[in-house]
Length: 95
Image (cartoon, rainbow, N blue to C red):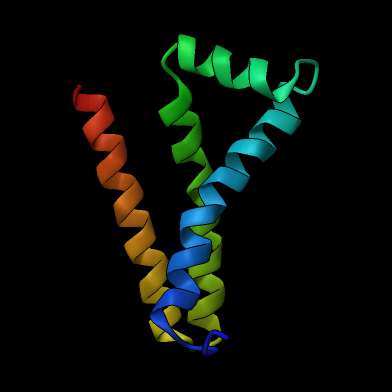
């Protein structure tokens, strides 16, 4: 389906991983409440974007894996996904 070294091979996981990081943050620090309550809580205190951007750290790890494996096009996809998240974070921080 996907080529091993392709832009989309990095972009799609790069767009998904911050949400995985968001969920991991929930599991590590807020397991005592259900996930829906956690999302309501971080939204209410205006920290949802901050927690989601913390999840983008996983993109850094994936970028270095692709870089070490010399999958340059995939690494570019991860960087593009990270820039998309950066623009979204800046947009919501300015509002």
